[in-house]
Image 1 (tube, rainbow, N blue to C red):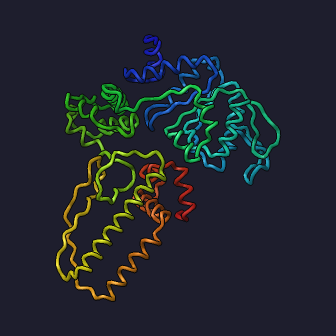
Image 2: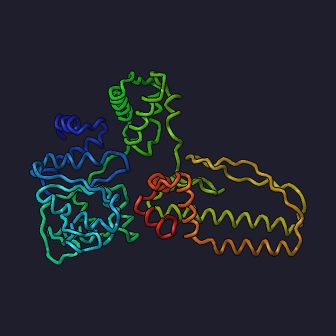
Length: 410
């Protein structure tokens, strides 16, 4: 590993940190740059994956040719084929003329496909053909065209799991994963967190003409102990927030913690479960929703059983203490708060109606209904802002758009 070369690359591309895994990723990018091998960059959202395609391109023989960065997750499913491969006049309603796609424009250069895990299956098949022989068809055309591009991809999706769920082609995965580069999350980079914060604070001090933020030891410890689910992107936002808002310029740990949001297990609403805590992580938005919905269904069933047991025991008007979890989005077990339910005398015919009604609700409240309710509540909380709602639900914007259309929520 050429340390001097790595330091030069870090300076050139504005990369801050001395973490060994980060250096190994930079070293791999430099080694593979001289070849035409396809590279797959993986890592959590916000870790800085966008720097590495630029490192590869600028250190390759294609550095004087065009470089395109395409966010596959931000392009609607109906137009992504046209964006990537182009279209001919009349290919679809709005195709009033011909259009070259990115693969035509980038001939001889490099294409960076960010969020490649969001590509529709049909587009994945087209991409596989380009990787295999450089051939593609423009939308609405039967003429085979050729291109010579270097493809670098990035994703925060667990592609092996997406393959098992039928959302990603296995043959395409092996073609993309010729050279894998994994970017470590910020929480595993130790003192890099403090270095990055100081760098961002200095940048904002100069940008906004405010005094520089100074960190004491407790503030540095608070930064290093935090989980940073949003990684470097989140740290940058926190540094900007503190630089602009905080009146005190010498920051301690207590001040830092005021600007750090509570950590959460998932980005969905609190789970209404009285079971023990779990460290299970989820890679699929459907898996998260199913987990929440099954927990809610189980809790409703358990509560109904308690009510039936009390009624069968001949309970009249008395106070029955139950315990329900507080809705705190934390990484700890739910805190149990006492709730008192007042039960009044219930006639036999009323008891029968209640039981039947409970069964009816349980049977008709399908998973799709619960998913629709979760999406609707997220949209309401964010006043219709779909990007923020998608973040809360831990799904892509494209998936949210599709669900909104599917459930008629628009």
